[in-house]
Image (cartoon, rainbow, N blue to C red; front, side):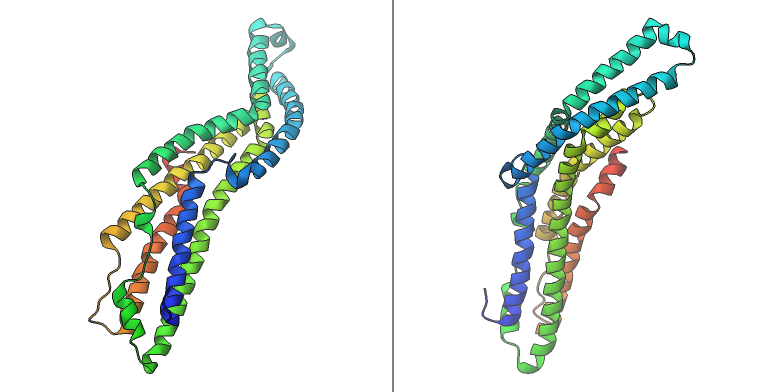
Length: 279
């Protein structure tokens, strides 16, 4: 870290950005069971087990609603094929409610394999890190008093934007992680809707939404790949022919634009998944 206040301020903002990228990488490779030592997962498991009883009650209700809604007359209730069809649906829904945790972890494991395959091609976040070129550091350290004030304003605004984008980025990824917990904790309730033919749409919508949240990890990993290639292939370069203020402003502006590309891709991961897979 440089002793110059302006350089140190920018380097601190870049370090915050790089740290958040590394944290994102860790979150994408961490399972919900292992997050924070498994303490959160233990609480989610307890909630899931507690709601299983409520799910069974809803299952009976939805089953009864489905039977009477699909029966045109009392004779339909006496038909063996009618009773068998609804019995099979009831048993399948009961298994889904009782094994809600296993259903959710299996879906996550399948989608997690896709995320891991995507991340295997990314290779890491080394190419996505941002550092200040030595030319800009030297130019800033050599500026006089008159150029110090506008340069200070440029660095202050730039570091503020970079820090804010860093936290927006990590909060988005954390939001996806906690949505996985919410879906898993409440799973017995929407899965109980499969007990009735007329209510099964709620269970289907729930599973589609959960798959979408799981697949967001693959889109985020691809976004990191795009940003890494963007930075390594056409990263901002310092134009030493300009003044220190103009050169710094140009470099910070181009860097912020590149960062906005990644933030936009990560923020739009949910929409991209829904459009791509029709979820």
